[in-house]
Image 1: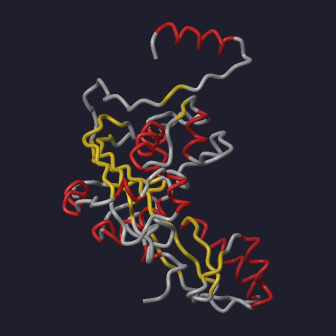
Image 2 (image 1 turned 45 degrees about the vertical axis):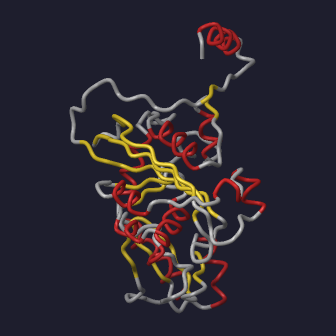
Length: 299
């Protein structure tokens, strides 16, 4: 913005009757040299022909490679990657309406797999705003992503506890006074980087710091194997979900919650001690991956 427009915006906001949204600009490099250990991260977003990782294809890949500190402070943007891919079949009309990407845009285009692998080689973490979707789409095309630690900025930052009503990227930006051109991969990456650099509204912690803390913490998946059919409503109310391929109810929780949930199952579902209920331990290396997707068919 230029100064006259900034002044007009300030006058409007000072009345208390108006709120001005500013167009998001790319995050500037931190002027201070790092005084802490630093790491390499990727912010990633995909646009695809649909939501089935086994049948649909990536048509656009956006990645921002950046340097961050142990504190969660972002120091600099290192590299920007944005490529289109022609899929094996025409792009569905609803995808074009959502993203603006047409068959003409992707004609003859291909994402360089070697370039993507080189970009990701030294990354300590890959961040996406819906990692359960983006990770599975990426693993189907680029298997090396299965060996990376992933974090989900949508579900692993306590946005609601920090005062936000919605967790969509656009809603969160508005809460911080910004807007952006959404639904294109690289634009959403820039938006997410700006959010991760912000202090959270209630706690004041940097958003990236809160995300990394949650992502590093292992979780467990407790399976209510053999639960009687008539207890399904009790399980649903508790937060358990149904895995069709495994035909079993399950719950993901923090490790310290495991004994509480096991006791709930023994008392409210089985009515007896169940010391041998299956439990999976999940870390950032596996979380959101195809191999830990309880909805995926058994291989």
